[in-house]
Image (tube, rainbow, N blue to C red; front, side, top):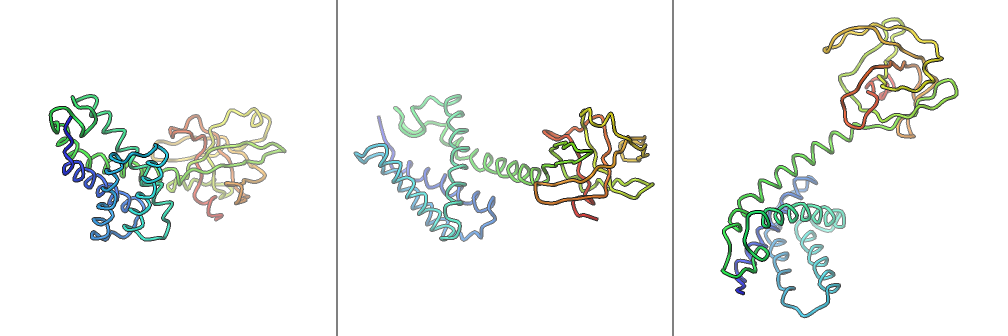
Length: 256
């Protein structure tokens, strides 16, 4: 079995550099290329752990220390533990994906330690790594932005509490033309609504128009913090958003 130490170090440096740049983009850190390069060099030294006669626990501790030193040299002491956790998250994503690719298309024992030199999949890995991390960053940002608009609601009505996971739709400014109260759209089959007086409110949206049943409720508590009054709950048939059963009106959130 041959070990190409120079190629191992260069590959490790490349991975560390891409991970640190990706981390800077995700966490919106200032990128200093010199610091990133030096931190990547620090990270590439972790390969020498393979040649140390130490226990697994010691090896893991050394790797953690090296990771912390990488983050420190790249971004400084501020939020160092948070940065390190995100670095490991990125590493797990990248490592798992590359391991899958290696098993599917490669004929090597690991990425580097192979019987007949560096396999062709190493070149493929070098090319695909930035693409994978770009896709990961893009999806992570979209997921973060999306779930920032999720709210836990407690709707108080006639001595009952109806709980709901709500999505804030900034385009939803539906109000009753009679009372001028904003409307919270709710998909709920709670029988409590069957015994409560309601009013029929016409609506007109981009998806169509019609009439919905609207109920005056006692109050609304958002994320166990904000309390809102003077609004209506309109029952609708369906909401096509994952894990959501209500659409929060921006005017209700803002208390206008």
